[in-house]
Length: 85
Image (cartoon, rainbow, N blue to C red):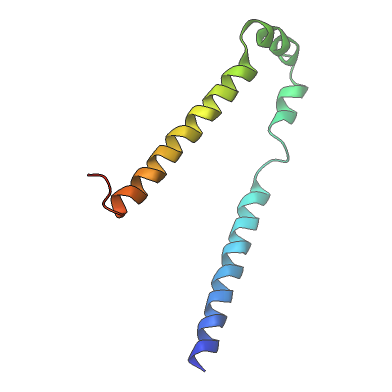
């Protein structure tokens, strides 16, 4: 009896979180790049990308962020295991 009530409560919480997430995502635009492609500046973006390697910079930034995130995640687990001070 108590177990069924707990399962129903957990299902309700999951459904509520799903609904809230669905509402939050429905507020976002379909694609943020639609605004850039419709602007007159889009012709200059290709020229800027030729001078400044934006794709390479984003790849390096992504790799750096993943490395930093992994460092913090591993350090939390190692502190929890009391392997480091």
